[in-house]
Length: 375
Length: 204
Image 1 (cartoon, rainbow over the protein chains, first blue to last red):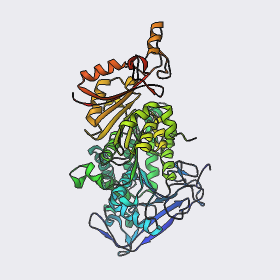
Image 2 (cartoon, rainbow over the protein chains, first blue to last red):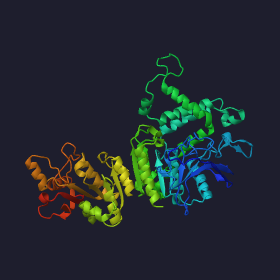
Image 3 (cartoon, rainbow over the protein chains, first blue to last red):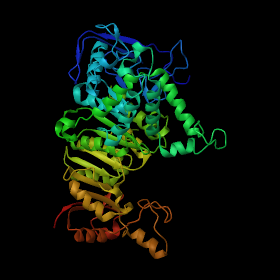
Image 4 (cartoon, chains in turn green, cyan):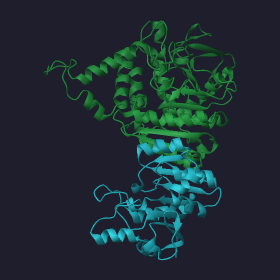
């Protein structure tokens, strides 16, 4: 594989200090799954934390020895000679708390009961994630990150890092993100949650003990989400009105290619993702709003930030539109932060942040080259 | 050779030195149509300014980032709504005025966002340009390097035109430097100067 970090191994960190959540809940003990690429330099100044979005995880780049086809979700961005150059940076990917890829989450066994947490897993916020990630950084021995970066919900974590731990972030790379969700965003999330919550196999979140999975709900949630991550143009280009069999069937079977695609994506997702994790992730998105405790004044929310920022948006992203990124940029300008902002012309909607667009990668590369130059 | 060497930059772009001469150490600067960020970089190196550029072109966004200057991708023509009033000491428009469509609202916006404005532009009244027109051709020169059919310059003007424009807009010209190459033209500037740099503020 070209410019890949190659074979990678997931690691696991255990934390025995209780973590108090924003909700008031306390998790006495938890584990985080993570991966690292590149080499930490002697003064530990070259670390980059990559935060993941709704369905992401710690497997950001490379592949596993026993599963060579399982390539990291941001492999096009991270590797030797890539925009996030692992020849220069020590990169950390972490599965967020509440996730379903190895970190403690709803499907993990609760020590008190010997059963999966299920519905009892605390509702987790972006602030809680950042707190838990900071403890991971402590354990690895990183006092300050060269950069914290992420797209979408990952970008929100990068923002939160700059606010929760201003002195621990030199650069925040906030990609396809927003300072908070709009009512429309929350509405989409709520429909997705309702699909899961009303699935008879959900059992109030404790489906594990019934030996079932709320597959239908999860599948619908993903199908809905997937529509919002694409653009009208991208869907028209890729599928148009194409029919699978070339003719109308006058029934309710899969006829249009887009139906086939969405159901396939839904099925694939429902086969590995945890329904409770999906609920938690969408809730974390809904709750994120750093301006909330400042009466909606985002300028005041960013007062604490000390990092330099790169903010990137995509023209066809209607889920987290460029105007939302401009809100972030404006708040940073008003606080005299160093900030650069690029609005990338892209046809892929919200998903653009995962695509290997040449100009987008050039923006990332040029910024990170500067970050590396200052090491 | 360093592409960002201040001395080389000043030699290549004499308006840079003229602009820098008016900007005190540590000032805050917004550079509209900042191109590859050379001017901001120059002002950062020579005047320690805190600055941002606004630029529309993708390749220039990358160039600015490589130059180590803050750049916000956006279209000047749609206004400066993201910027607060009086947010900057200086708002610059270097060799861009003549290429703006909505020139008047933009100059007003400059003086809303900044305490003072600085513009540089090619003087259409420069004698060589006049000669070209007299001979029956649109001028093509170092300061005006485009053919009539591919030029981004839609609002070319002379020194007189710009000063009339300022008067009509209730804008006070504070200072002016007119240059040809790197020499300042004090005599008959509207005829002998190829590039003009103006510093101005709101109000009569």
